[in-house]
Length: 327
Image (cartoon, rainbow, N blue to C red; front, side, top):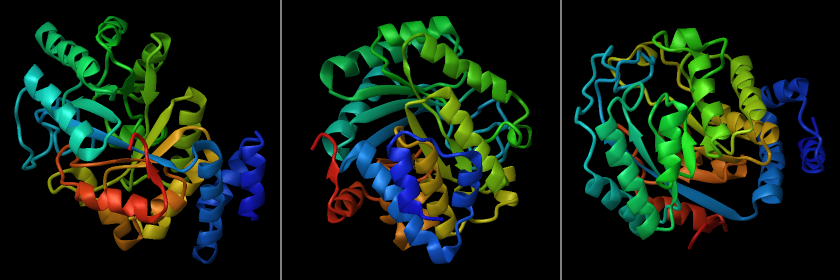
């Protein structure tokens, strides 16, 4: 396949076909750098030379009622995950300010464990914190709160919410093997409710949990159909005690890069990021995630695992000749 010619065709407005996508994700190792060159061409065409940095805070941890196979916070799994209730409004605001000032983040998300926001008091804390963050920072304000209804989304938007994060996690055909306590349709419903309310959506998935290459493509085309604004890709960091860890087969660095590049071809205009597990999955090849088409990454720590030192991330981006948005 001529990856540069395909990238030029996509840049001109012709979408990648399922057959072309299948060829991309099965690119042989010997052609991997040709694939990256095409993906990088698309990144530069649609997103310029800037990298966006996102920060998160684990605002409420553990005892989740859902049984997602990869999650350390599920009450169904025996892990060493910390357990604590929703953080205070002030602590949430402090975390957001720190992400902007210390990490160079331009987007920040409050992330809570659990199927949804269960009480009015929790929702009040979150909306008050969003209002304060909107007053005191320039951050793009995001939340990841599980399944939400229209009224909850409306209250969050009124408080200053700009974007809802709600991963599909995996392909619809694989979803029942990943989770049985809620459905793929439940996730799609929350995404559509956010879109109906005029809230942007960030939605992606986690890879290396047993899905096939074909199911990775299935997820990509589902996200394209939903027209989400941002797509975070996570690579499983196996946590002892979770079913996904027990069945874990590590993705090779080239497999991860093929994944990112293929998603860039399928989703040329969306923000595309490699988030959780990137350090472990790519090792010394981490900088190549941007050549593979990523224009976003998460800076700082993840929900239950440590991230790479923020200064190292910023250095990595600048040494590639890229610019950090907002700096």
